[in-house]
Length: 142
Image 1 (cartoon, one colour):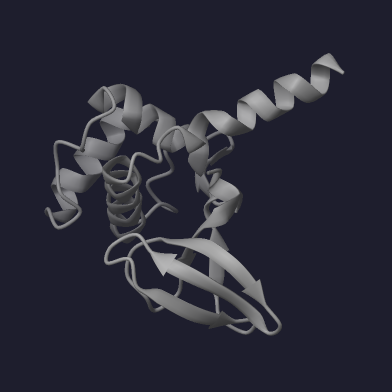
Image 2 (image 1 turned 120 degrees about the vertical axis):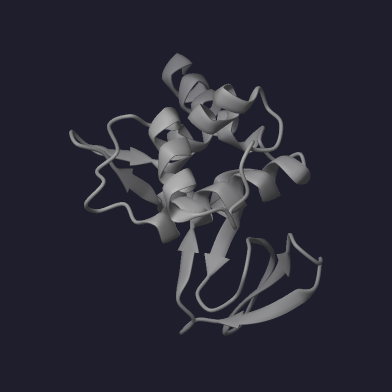
């Protein structure tokens, strides 16, 4: 499953995967408790493949940030929790992405990234980070 099918819904905890489309939105399944929710068109939804993190030089796609976390953690759960203190979250994230923009990336953003990474890792969905590159490579070959 690619990051195009994984999303965050404003006001709801965790991540969701798109199950099916409906006439006025879609049905998504929570990665936390596997409950299905009906999401209408007017809900504030963020697709993971479209999220980026500010660095001092560019906006780095979330996919690349999650890959860096995966490399740091060797594919296992993060060494910190998303519930840790602001300082420890920022220190951890600085180890992952040394040039992140501290003025525009807040502790709440880092908290979400750590939580999302752990959810994806728990559900063996980290391979979604590699899928985009494979699709681009196969298109270039044609």
